Image (cartoon, rainbow over all chains, first blue to last red):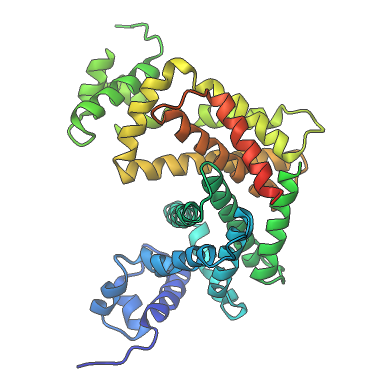
Length: 188
Length: 188
């Protein structure tokens, strides 16, 4: 039986977040996630290696938003402006309509040190990809790595703020505010 | 039998680095590390939870160098100057005499993704400790987290350069050069 599965990866992520929030990560099975998403376990494993990995979505696709944003920045952009272009390209991953789901996901991750580590490692990989894209633009070391990692520090802080209760600014604004903080820090 | 063990933790680290470089991480046992360091396995486990952990030394002691450096910075120091004080306080951990051993350790870690992840997580924990010390100094978010993480980006880049073949600058100089890069990045 061939079945059309619109956004199966996205539905699996939403199902996993709901079940983790309801029952905890340990008590939730791949079978339960697949059932709630309306797909087979086999489909689950086509997208994700284990139940925890669902929370981190398609890592390569996520990283490529940042990296392509850096690559596509104007040729005369400064390293920080190229990084800013990468961060803004990734903002599309976090539309206002996903804020409530993202908050639940954030709560699940915050309660589990192993998941916090996966999140850190995911963002470290994005930073390394951006540093490589900066080097391709002719930025030398250590400037490329420092600019990319500082940019990811800005992005992660913006994301944490976006998830916090009472925060109404959108990601694009929070990223810009963070970039201004980084400039102010550098200016002493 | 009571035996005086001068710097057992340090001797265990050097023994582990040697054995990992000679035989690989998988083939090296805790018993072999303890034997080369001249201590018992029981002593090994008083210091470290597993054979890989030896490569990361005393995490709390390492982090406290950075954190105390931030805390002890002059009261009117800017966030970046306080971070710089933390990085320079930690430089004592990397004297010129340890460069050869550190290079071997770096080679072992670079060859093993799991160890690279532990190193990243170790430095992420240091960054969080420095961010907390900045908040205690009255620095608000997101500036505290961005300054601390950018500082750790500088430090990690300096450390990677320090380990690279042909690099003759000492850690203190490499850290200062990286801080100047960070300032230049912020200035655009």
